[in-house]
Image 1 (cartoon, rainbow, N blue to C red):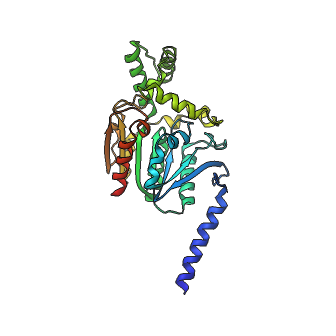
Image 2: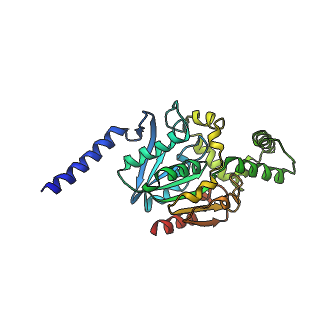
Image 3: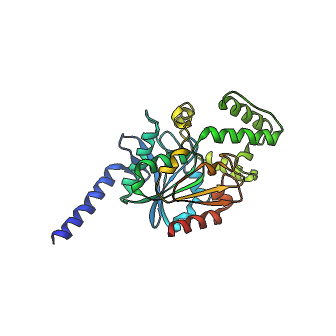
Length: 294
């Protein structure tokens, strides 16, 4: 009888904690009182999706094929603080962003989860795995960067190749902005994400469907901590890792994944660009399904 009462008490305490963090059906409150947009859908082990940007949001991933994973996983789609449908904050440093993920993990009531990151989200997912690896069943890195300067250099090189230009600079940011300007003038910006212009038109339609918070985006590129090279530390993250990389991902660089040295990593290469979850949805879903079976 005491055992049964203990189980009931534990269940009740989890529900109370969840209620304390939940403001409404789509908003939770972080431990430092920032309101984050959160949608939960699907079945199975919880999987928190960490979107890119910096300063993007989770809706485009969900609406353009990411929701296929709901057949095997309970997906937690959240918008990072200062992004999308979430509130702004005073603190945008990496450690605090990692705590937001941990707050969502705690809210899920599950001790072990999957973490799925796309693009810039890889930085936050890596830092979470570094600190909270004990709470991870696995880490899924989809076309992610773990060294922003390296990825920006890849972008500049691709633009030079595409346009026949020779843009160089002593530091990466001036070269990056100059290259992006040239690409915009040539009306070829979509090439960074996909060879298919209609894919980016669909993405833009979704991104314009709702007023988005851009507070984090306006600050992140001025925060040196996000520009660190995190790839050397991957050798110390001892969790199962699935790396999915596109052969024509010119946003982070098609060879960027080769810098990763996770001890328990497996790599899935898919022919495509930065939006494999949409343009190669079946291959993307199959790779994730195979990974979570183990």
